[in-house]
Amino acid sequence: MSAGPQPVSDPVWFKSSYSGGNATECVEAAFASTHVRVRDSKKAQGHEVAISANAWQLFVCSIRAIANK
Image (tube, rainbow, N blue to C red; front, side):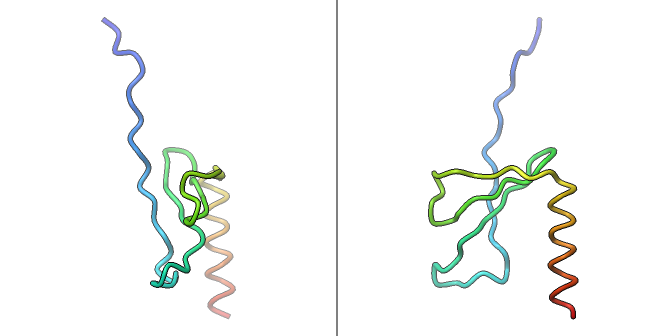
């Protein structure tokens, strides 16, 4: 007997620890198996962008390098 398609769990969205605590956050992300999903936190039901895991890692490393200068 084949199992068929399995339900996909809802993504766990997170905001940067540097985001403001007074609803000023504007971007949040969620990790998926091969990519990172990014969306506007004020429009959670709106569009989102899928970015490859490698591109996300390069982005984060670049931001860290700039912040450490």
